[in-house]
Length: 480
Ligand SMILES: C[S@@+](CC[C@H](N)C(=O)[O-])C[C@H]1O[C@@H](n2cnc3c(N)ncnc32)[C@H](O)[C@@H]1O
Ligand SMILES: [Zn+2]
Image (cartoon, rainbow, N blue to C red; front, side, top):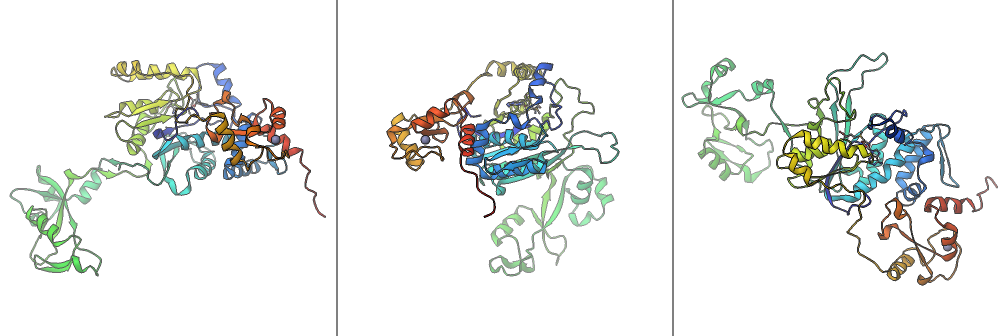
């Protein structure tokens, strides 16, 4: 993601790995591959520069991670800023430290109208919600979607069987893109609500009972809606219509037009006229945030056990994109998101990222399997091993030095450095996230150091270097 341009993606729909119990839930093709991920959430593996970037650029995230560590029985050394997760090697705190920079990147590459759908493990979801609030903003939480994952689960002795997934939907800004989503009406609702039919030779007034209605085989199903206005004080909507004087929902012009078109009916003289709402004109029942119809098969013994139902992604993508929009899954697995984006009609553009080499062949296989039409698509699938941002304007080293010098308060970037009288030309340019880790030349990733600091830092990660510098400072004395 660090190699992707800012604001280049319309929708991210993803299902990151989670491994609180040291049993990674994705069989990654080979045992060796599996091994690689087993230790992923160990605190000692969290790289220093991430820790530092989080601490300096995202103080809220730092506090969330620290709180998670304390909840798990760890402690914080407030002098060095180091988190000690105690004897627990596999921790939610470490998981959050892994997810945080990725969530930050997801936010950066989304367009202002973009939407993120993040599938969360039940053990981590409330922690991830905090991270997401910190990065995307609390006000941009669109939905928490709960989807039932299996038709049934075995009895659990001391709890209810766990059987739903949680997906958080966040907008990058308040201007997020959204298409309303509908599901088919159910029969019960039809019978309760759309109880009348429009027939050539039967007036609506004659359709008294449901039995009568059930006998009618053709005609358009409809219901009569209220067009009287509950508000009393609407002078411009108050007028007489078909002998009834009151406040209406519509202006007189609109009312008369609808009446002329036969859309407004007065069932008997003296009754308040009503509006004919035809079932065949309704898009369906508005879909809510509890989904019971996108389950995984009873025994999900697919080649990729974390594979998610395609209907799930289909639906998510349709909510937040238009045809041709770019959809990204940064933890693509066997590419359910990508296949869903390709399947939609008209299809969306898509990009998938996965660290596992098996994912690449799995994805190609899946694309080929899914439909013959992918023969064409696969030919145009580009596989890249690295990516470089193209939206960073080149800046000359001299200019960069001046910019950083001003930004750093006309001094060395190391806050513990006491070098004096430093000029812009004296700065040595460095990266906070080294280029080998995908760190870009973007100004936000550059620092200017004095010669002394630059030498002492050497090839060390910036975070580690800062920790060491901090540790050299006098410790505050407790008491007086
Ligand atoms: C839960 S699976 C996603 C499954 C996917 N939704 C599907 O239906 O196939 C998580 C994926 O994240 C990948 N992954 C783990 N760490 C990663 C990393 N650092 N960068 C990219 N992908 C990673 C794993 O290889 C795995 O395929
Ligand atoms: Zn210095």
